[in-house]
Image 1 (tube, one colour):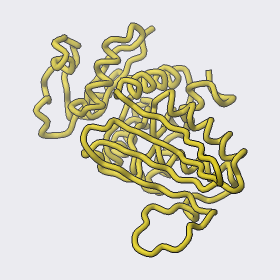
Image 2 (cartoon, helix red, strand yellow):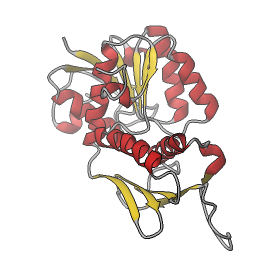
Image 3 (tube, one colour):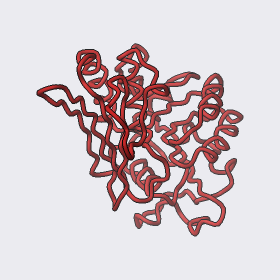
Image 4 (spheres, one colour):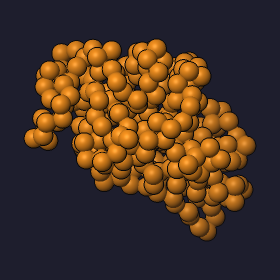
Length: 271
C-alpha cells in the first residue's frame, strides 16, 4: 500500500524535488501540496513543472492540503513548521521535519507534539550525512586529546540561517562524544586579536555563495597530522530520497521523536 504524503513549500527548490521524488516512487502517493498565500502556483497541478498531472492542486489551505495524508514532509521555516504541527497533531498526520533554525523553545514544542504523532526531525536527510555523524562520534572519542576541532560549512547564497543545522548537529555529536556542552564551547566567529586558541573549543566557519548545495567538513588538527571528515552534496535529490525513507518509517511507527539514525537502523529503534 502506498504511503500518502503531503509536501509543504511546494514552490521551493526542496519542495519541487520532493514532489518529483514522490511522483517517481512506486510505493508513495502525493496526497497534498501546500504553499504560502500569494504563491503563483496556487490552484495549479503540483506536477505541472514536470509536465505531468499529479491530480493534486497546490493550496494554501492547511486542512485541505493535509486531508488524507499519512505524512507531511516539511522543509520550510520554523514559524511555518510549527503552524503545520498544530494541525498535524489534530489530524493525526505524522511529520518529517527538515526545517532548520529552530530556537530551543520551538524544539521543545516539537518534542511535545511527538507525544501525539510520529515526528522524524533531522537537520539533514542525506543518508551519507547521517553515516558521517556516526563516523564523527567514533573519531571524536579516539581523538579526544591533542586535536583542535573546526567545522567548516558552505551553502548557497539564499540560505538564511548560519551555521547550518547540519554543522550544528555535527558539533553536537562531537561535543557529546567528548563530554562537552556545545553551547559552552562553541566559537562562531573570530576577528582581531583573539589570543591563542582554547583547546576545549569547537570552532565554526560559514561560507555563503553561488548555488552550493551543501558542503561540510569537520577538521581534527593535531601536531603533525590532520584528519578531515567531509560530506559534499551535488544534488538535493539525496535529501528527497532520505525524506521518503523517513516517511515510510513513520507510516509504520507510532508517536515519538525520531532521528535519521532510527530510520537507517543505526539505533535499536530503526528498521
